[in-house]
Length: 264
Image 1: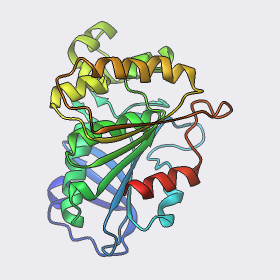
Image 2: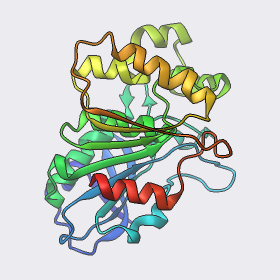
Image 3: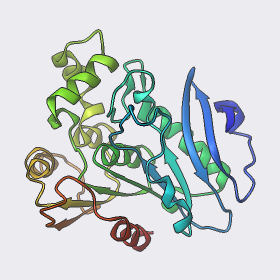
């Protein structure tokens, strides 16, 4: 594992064929990534984590990292610091109240892209479920990048109440749920983040229509809330499909890889 401070990262030279974990200390927090880099590849794909099972393996975790050699692209896998040391299964990149993890991760990725010589428009974020939420948020923060999500949460508060409340108790222990909503809704809602940053990334939103809770709690409210924003919406493309047996689960690996390759 390569361990660097944020300042050290800004001057570090990555050799081509780099393939290892990275720990970056930023604002007194340790953030973990898995990077496969080849200077001959013109694009980089960044993968965000969805829910995990800490009883099987403890963080840091890098979902879909087994895919890394199947892309003719560099790949960056993003661990979610929110899930470290507390037994949480899902964290949506929240971090802590005084250190919003997605903003800090975006700052690290910005530097990584510069050191690897990738422009924002050569960068694609992918994730499903909570990883979809994180990828959309990172696409907002890293302007010019592309985003592909599959069955994402668009508003954390509309997910399973037990999981949401567990996360809020860990991340925002000194606030009631209503206080969190009043103070930090832009951390929990993608449309509120669009509004805050006045930006919508180039987004492919893939959704299984057979996942009725996703359609009711995330797709429909998302589309409704977008209509109230004074922002151009032509950056968003929807891809609906119907797989009754799959439900909330994402498309197969092969289908996902084909879509990612196409959009790269």
